[in-house]
Image (tube, rainbow, N blue to C red; front, side, top):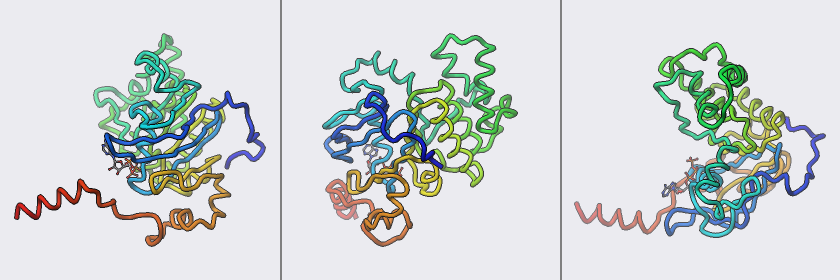
Length: 281
Ligand SMILES: Nc1ncnc2c1ncn2[C@@H]1O[C@H](COP(=O)(O)OP(=O)(O)OP(=O)(O)O)[C@@H](O)[C@H]1O
């Protein structure tokens, strides 16, 4: 559970990630607009929303993969759109990202997969690398699996190895894309606690994109709910749980009917495709 004694007010320099009136999308299409969000060091923030609501898109904006259509993304005090390619590369070393398809290198064993960022970006000695990697593997319960090849581990184990790799550089900001996907209930609880502990111990900011209400509410300081192309609700887990907003209510209860759209919207591109399909028959 989030520590109630943790101070809720910290200086503004403590902000690790800020979206400031952000609009972001692909080509001409805007997926999210009017996004205002701040994540402080030591905080765990969960971003939730239905399928296609723009969670991964928001993550891509935070890593600089997707430039803003309007507004700003500020990471560790740096406005991403003002950074050179070298500046962005340097900043990324201070960030950890666990992608949804956090693919491991199949030609490396578990240990070398986790050691990879240390070898790429630091001048740590072999002895230091050994201790650091074993500590991170221990945290995900896989120390004794260090010598295994990636073909010898299960999908859920691979997710945990990817998690160890995302935190091995002890980054200041960690972005997790669906960290609970494909995990059994025990691993899910352990992973949630690991995310919380990593934030507390390293004082880093953690942003997790997830569908899992129970796990994210158990560790998050704040939760944001995406819908209708923007943030529809934000607050502490307790505030959201008590919300009367029909959108929040439907999402948290997983009810099929309500304002959360189940169907992908019919766009002009779909209408044009359908007309072509029908014309062709
Ligand atoms: N590379 C892309 N090019 C064009 N449109 C995209 C691209 N990636 C995603 N989209 C569109 O952006 C919208 C949001 O997608 P996004 O992947 O951010 O949703 P999500 O909330 O992460 O969904 P899920 O929970 O299903 O992973 C969708 O309508 C999707 O079709």
